[in-house]
Each structure stands twice: as C-alpha cells, then as structure tokens.
Image (cartoon, rainbow, N blue to C red):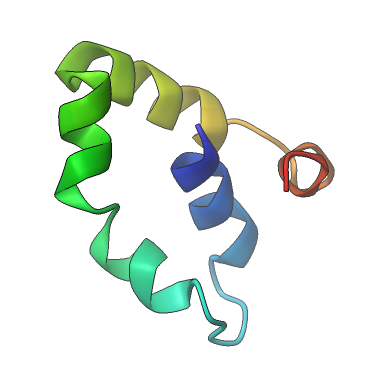
Length: 58
C-alpha cells in the first residue's frame, strides 16, 4: 500500500530521496514477500489514497 501511496503523493513533485525508488518500482523482495495477489491489492489501495491519507501513513 505504501508504494502506491508514495507514487500518488510524489507524482509531478520535485525529485526526493524516494523518487527514484517510486519511479522504478519497489524492490523485488516486496512483491515476493507479499505474493502477487496481495501486492497488487495493496498497491491499488495505496494508489487510491489522498495526499493527506498517504502522508498520515508515513
């Protein structure tokens, strides 16, 4: 969920420490640890958050 949220929050903003990570995607271990179905669900959920909701998770 955090990756989708981070992508939504920084889209179009100036580059930050996490910008490169968000532009290239999460480390393969995140997807592997969660499993494909859980990863896709968390990504979709995070991408639907408002900027305020996303920053509250950090």
